[in-house]
Length: 122
Image 1 (cartoon, rainbow, N blue to C red):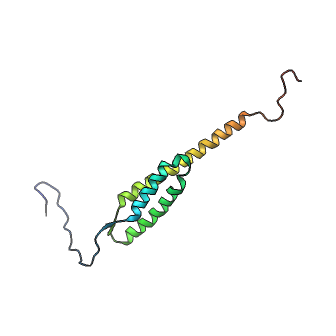
Image 2 (tube, helix red, strand yellow):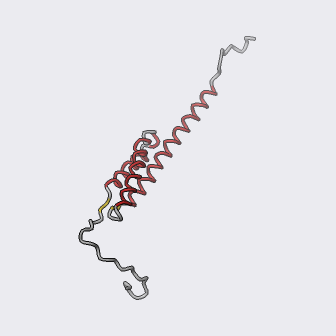
């Protein structure tokens, strides 16, 4: 069966069983996206680690549920976006920690240790 002359043939859809559930969007996928967004927005303040980690844990559960549902749970795009945002938040938090450590080391090495005597003291 083709949709119009010159187009690629479309695969026929089989009849759905009347007792099959309707496809619905996974609520965990939205939660993953929201937590990932919060993780990315607060990643520079290191507080983004908590929502980003929760988003990644929840994403794993949502993927398992979607696989077990046999295609009746949708929301894979929201899940992927949420995971990317969560990883971005974790990356921003790690960058902030590394920059803080480097600044701390530079400031520590810039200070003198011991007594600082006047120049005329031998």
